[in-house]
Image (cartoon, rainbow, N blue to C red; front, side, top):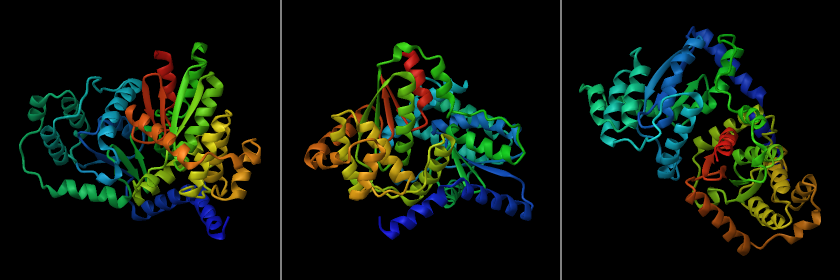
Length: 427
């Protein structure tokens, strides 16, 4: 590996480290105290975001449990380049919100469909007027409930006609972008983002460490699936769990290792479906999104005790070599061991997957004879298979990796092991 990649891998390890995170948090806390500012959480709300509808139901309780002020800010337009397949994302997010609402006992209609656009505009403007109103969250929940049930009459009754400075929505959107994110249903607290219910556990732990909370974590998803395994009927053994992933996705790296643990514990058969990275398919990932994904994957990996940070980006030749070898090794049932070793090597151990030496190390770590590197599958053979995997993922309703498929359920994200358990119980 060249010196440049070595330096980058150590810089990545520092940026991903808990030490760097804790230092940044300490600096933010010291700066707040010097300025004598109260602890304030910014919450970015969008009326037609199903995750926002869930957030407004839990944030008042969060404010009571912790000594913080929550300031809502309404946004309307999100940057289109952050969402490569907005229609699939929108459809999936509604299904996912229904699933999360059921898990946490929150309100979200199972029959929800994409809200009326005119009603959404009315709702966003009404709520933007109420950003400083103490009743914001209760009104936002009521308006959102009407929107998701297509009750246009109720929306009109709740959204009284009044002047609104249209610049307000734009200012909030610019602030979200300036702070470094792009999604609604999102919390920002002193340098870090916590989008949706899925990341509230990180915020809860942070605030508890400051000694300003109740010491509890109410939104713990990471361990939930392990508890669920204890009550999982052994008849699920032999069922097939498909995993669509990319070796260039840090979330896929985490998903591979969690799915492997899940398969070992449950007896479920894990079937790997590698796909090409977005960038290698001509879909660039904006810098702000890359930065957030890296730091978020780092904290997600820490919670799961998975090493992360010493990265040698596998974009390009490393991905090609991984795909060529992985598809070939699948014929011998060695693809899981290989892809686990490969992703850990490039995302956590500073090993260059594009070099012969790197590939030898990876095969040795996987317990696979290094001589098998010579039997890599030709590109004109494996590329069509990878594309078929991608098309299958799209047909199942997902746009990106990692995506799980269990029975008729499609689940997106490395943090959906708990939903896999639920799907196995219901099918």
